[in-house]
Amino acid sequence: MKAARQTTLRDTATVTGIGVHSGLPVTLSIHPADANYGISFMRTGIEGCADREVRACVRAVTATEFATVLGDADGPLCSTAEHVLAALSGLGVDNALIEIDGPEVPIMDGSAAAFVAAIEQAGIVTLAAPRRYIQILKPVRVARGDCFGELRPYPRGFRLEVEIAFDNALIGRQNIALDVTPETFRKEVARARTFGFMRDVSKLWSAGYALGATFENTLVVSDNRVLNAEGLRFADEFVRHKALDAIGDLALAGAPLLGAYRSIRGGHKLNHAVLCALMADPSAWTYVDGGQVARRHRGQADVATGMVAPVFGPDVS
Image 1 (cartoon, rainbow, N blue to C red):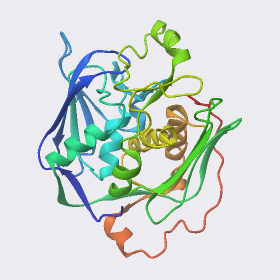
Image 2 (cartoon, rainbow, N blue to C red; image 1 turned 60 degrees about the vertical axis):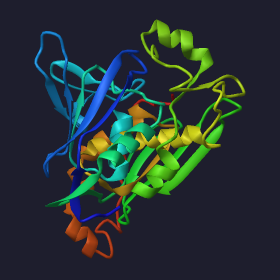
Image 3 (cartoon, helix red, strand yellow; image 1 turned 30 degrees about the vertical axis):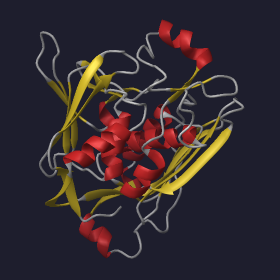
């Protein structure tokens, strides 16, 4: 997906639902934005406070325990941002203002499908400004034990290689590899739902999480079967959802990536750690505009040297 020019929405896209962790009702509207605006979240409806806005970037991440949370010096602003970010990134939308009137992006059916439908109904338009990419120039790795994440050069676009391994007979070891384009995102990733284990429900509730989780928005797994009446949308829906999360988390780079991301037993924490490691090493990446990308037959990162980043804790949920 190496388009030469930036995009935004033709019209505002709106969805309503509840937060999977907060259980609170929320309306989310994605508004068109000018070229070079990027993606930002605006939190409205805060009692006694003015609206707050935060740019969707790696520096705005305040927590990654069970979801990606964005905020600023005044504290958290928006939780569970990854699915709407994945929809915008997967469909190639560069500029948008995401307005929410609650503390958490609505979970919808647990996937990005509702956001994709709303964005496509609103329409996507091309702007005059050239698109700016982040091209990976050399591998950047974060590892601990059997958890591993890496961004490496891949001049043909953005590639995902995700592997999970759970001590559960139904899930076990699954992997997916694909070049991310609007077509592959819609077909292979967007409908994959978030999942959780029945054995963890009481612990999550007592900790204040998953208060809005239901069979309508979460795949619930027992020891050897899915408890949802619908069953699985894909035989390997679990790893496809991890790929969806990775697309959303890596969208916080602030520009589309020209590179390949490999994740083994990863999650929000590992995705964020790899992105932080990349941003911390200016020699590992560079900006290129869409015109350069279209003209280039070989990426400037075709020959690369390795770099191992500091160790971060694993995220295997």
